[in-house]
Every structure is written in structure tokens, then in C-alpha cells.
Image (tube, rainbow over all chains, first blue to last red; front, side, top):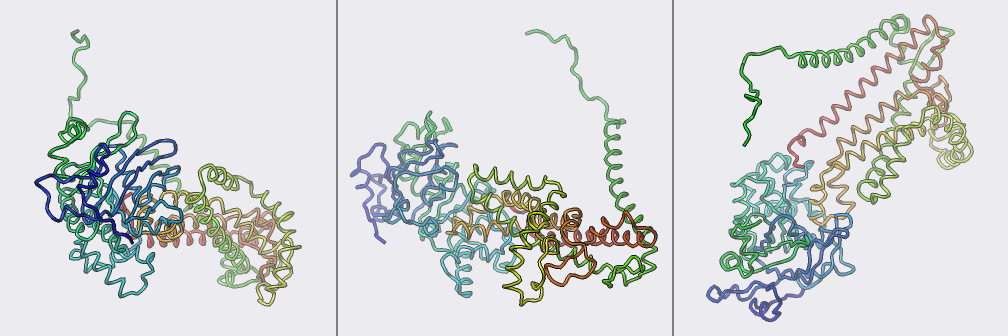
Length: 293
Length: 323
């Protein structure tokens, strides 16, 4: 596993592409930690299609380890399509295909000979609506992915289920009900169960596709807190239609927009604080100030 | 702007309840239709019971425990027919369900649309073929194949097992099993396909995102989710298999003896009624009606068991599933 270390400002300046696709560090805001971040996912000139429809064009960006990166933008801007390209879920739609490169710790997940199932073991996903498996208990739901890793030992499974539930701050709620069906939980608990299920396989990256859009405000806040905690161990990429959520939880924010041709493009990608306070692109400014969208 | 010449627009004024003829007619008609269905079932049970009372009194419990059916000596034992019905139906149920689920999975999970549509249509076409056509095909094509090719291979390789050690003929228990399997396949397949297609894609994506292969996704997420529906499909098929008469009558060989092996000629309850009813009088007729009563009771019992099974499986996974 190659480790790509890079100084953030150098990325921004060194490549010098317009629009600026790497988050830059504001002069006063830089501290030691943010100067140097490991790149987990590097996207190079990504194009995504549904049949003949070009859905996402020309995306190049770097996603940093142990941070929360938010993808925002109006409906139809391609943000969900883009995130689904990061773990090869995009290709499940009939006729869908991808051009370009997505490097996970330096290796291209679209290279020949790559098994998409193994990509997904390292890049997990949480979906818009909680989708626990209805025929499985809470514990079985969390353990569902372990068998694909070849984890068969009962006590190891038990340990990992417990750890994942604790990390998803669900353990206290369910520790006496592990044998109950997962769908007996409330919506917010179900979504935390799905997060526990995703992190039980110890992925590098957890993708979240509008994980709170089906939840009430209190459950939403819990998930947001959880994202912050999880970012200490995982790389989190979250799609959200909620700008406040992006501002609250993310370190970096990417703004996407589809122009008249209905092809989604990355407009601006920077540190969250900078994007919301000092947007460089007029379109970003219009969107975050609510003038359109 | 022009002033309206229509005066006050119509508004509700009174709160008093009024007579609503449409509601009354609808309620009455719907209630009557429901009552008719219930009455038909009760009437059917009652008539069959009343007309078979003579035979019930004559044979008593021996009717269901004896294998001797000899109308000329007024001996009526139906165990051989019950055995024929149960063996052929269960065989058809098991094999049709296995094939149907595989076909349904292929159509929903694997085949591209341009293949899935025509194949689906062809399988459903099987359901539209009249029973008598199946019966004739069973005799002239399938039966001959079983006698000349399939049967000899089975008896020479598996003949050391008693149930396979027989003389393959054109007609017999095995022919009936195969015909029934083919006949109930379209029903089971069509319902299974709809049930599997109704599994939310969020379930497939959920397991795939954990690193499942396509087969693992089917085994772990799709089939468990669909299992109650697939069981319902199988039960629909079983009900059809138990009641199917004409094609089975043509190919089963119509022997009143308990079958000894899979190639023995046999009989089913529905076939014996169809074959003998036109000439039956008196006690014989009453005994055939008792067979019909028994068939109705068995069908009823299957449906109750099926409902219990489906209820047990779905318990806890009902409305809470988010689509």
C-alpha cells in the first residue's frame, strides 16, 4: 500500500488547474496538522455516464484521510453519481460506465483485474434510507459483511459486532436486544446500525449518500456527531443537500453544479470554512447565499 | 375586471346527515358479493357431506386407511388415490419451485431486458396451454421418451433402490409428476419473478456495498427478503397440482393399486372422480362424492398450513421495512 503524502498548498499551487480543485489553506488558518494530510482517494479526470447521458464530467480532486469531505449542490448536479463512482456502485445501473481514474491509496479501482467486491470492502457505503436486512437480527446485520472477509470465528465476530456498535454509538441502545430484528429499531437507530454494519469490516473510507435525509432533526444531529468521531479513524465522504450540515460536519466541501447541458461538474472544492465564507466562484456564492438552488 | 354573473358560488350549508343512495347501493352490493362467496363454500361442503353420508356410514374409517377400491364388491378404500395425489403434487411442488426460482432469479438479477422479456413471456405462455394438450403431449412425446430412453437408464443405474426398480411405461406415476411440474411451473415462476423483482434495490445495494458478489447478494439479501412471497407462489402451484385432473388422468395409468415404484401406474383423487363418476350410481356415486369431500378438506388444510407458514416467516418483517 503506497502512502501518498502531500502538502496541501503545493497541490493547489503546483497543479495550477482552473478551477482550483484542491482545497487551499487560508493564510491565517493553517496549523501544523492541516499542512500535511494524507490523500486517500485521488480522482483524475473522472467522467460518469448513464448510457449515452453524460452525468458527471471532468472531476479531478483529492480526498484527504481522516477528514469529512462534503459534496453539495442542487438536485441533479451529479453528487450522488460521483460518490457512487468511489466504490464502483455506479456500475450497477444498467448501461452505466465510468472513464478516468479513481486511486485508492495510489491504486486505480477501475484498473483491469480489480474486483469491485474487494473495492467495496475497503470503501463502505451508507445510503439515503436506512436499509437493514429485515430477516436478520441486529447482531447479524452488523456481522453481515464479515463473512466476505472470511471472518468465521464466533468470538471474533461477537467482538467486532460489539466494537462496531460502540463506534456507531448504538451499543448502549441495543446491547440487550442483539437478537431482535434490525428493523424493529427507530429510523435514526437503523441508520446507525447501517453505519455499524459498514464500519464492522474496517474499511478505509465510508461514503454516505444523504444519510440524514430520511431522519428527524435529533437523529440527524446524532449522525452528524458520529461523522466527526468516525473521521478520527476513517475517511468520510458525505453527499448532502443540506448546506448547514456540510458547514457543521465537514472539513472540506466540494460544490457541484450541472449547467444547461445537464452534465454535473465540480465548481469549487476547498476547506469548508473558506468555501462558505470566501467563495471564489460566483456560482458557489449564489448557491450558498440562497440566490438559487 | 368583470363581475361574476353567476351569483354566490355553491357552498355547503347544512351539517345534517342526509341519505346517500350511492353509498348504500355500494355497501349492499359489496356485502352481497362477499356473502355469496362464503355461501358457495359452505354449500359445497354441505352438499358433498350430505351426498357422501351413505358411503361414510358404509365404509367408516376404512375409507381412508384401505387401499382396496372395488365398486363391484362395494369395497371403497382411497388410500392409493390419496398417495397418488400427494406423491405427484409434492414432487411437482418441489421441482417446479426450484426451477421457477432459478428462472425468476435469472430474469430479474442476471438477464438483460431484451432477453428477460421474451423468456418471461414464453414461460407465461405455458400457463395458457389447455390441460388436454399437456396430456396428449405427455402420452405421445414425453411418455414415449420415458419408456424408451429415460426409464431404462434410471432402472439400470438406480434399480438397486426399490423405488426406482420398475418397468417404465408410457403412463405412470413418474409421467404424472413431470407433467404436473411443467403445468404448475408458469404460475410459480410468474409469482416468484414478481416477488423477487419487488425486493427493494436498497437491499441489494446494502449487501453489495459490504463486498458481496452477485451470488452472495442473491443468497444473503434477495432470497431471504423474498422467501415468504416465494412460499406463497409455491402454495399457489401446489393447489393447482392437487386439483389438476385431465392431463394427469391421461398420463398416470389409472391403476387402483398403491404404487410400488416411480414407474408404477397409479391414480389420483381427482382422476378417479373424473373417470368413474359418469357411470357411478348408488353407493359407488356416494363414495366418489366422499373422495371429493376429502379432496376439498385436503385443499383447505393445505391453505391453512400455507397461511400459517407465510405468517410465521413474515412475522416481524412486516410494515417496518423501508422501501
